Length: 155
Image (cartoon, rainbow, N blue to C red; front, side):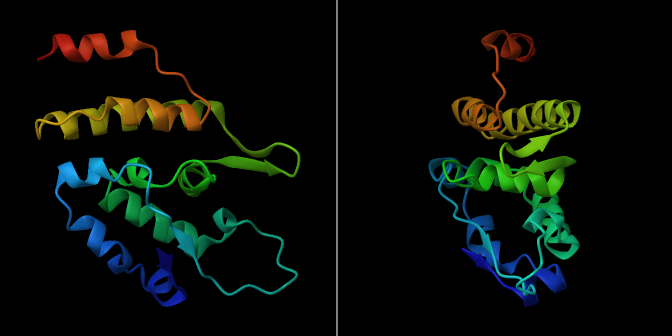
């Protein structure tokens, strides 16, 4: 799915309308399949990564706030999930190592997202823990199975 400059500039989330219209069950069935790309005009000599462009970053922040399940849907194997998280968190970039997140920020974000999306799915009678564990793994974090035990005891 392409997000163009007009949508980015207006903070218009309508490119995601078809996804937002899906039921929670359908959203989880499409986990890891959203190919999200951005079209933003840049000069040929502009060295910035997309996550360094304030307008694109702001659009992603708004999309993430309005649709907290979005990271579950974004394609993972090509680095799109990592790019999405880079829109939300402090990070550095090097040609050799790629995106490097501030470790504490990444740990806080992923823990928050695990709590949020686990509660979201369970309140709808669904299960998304496998997708959450995969999402964390793509970002370089391992979720210990014991993480879920206090949450399971709460039900």
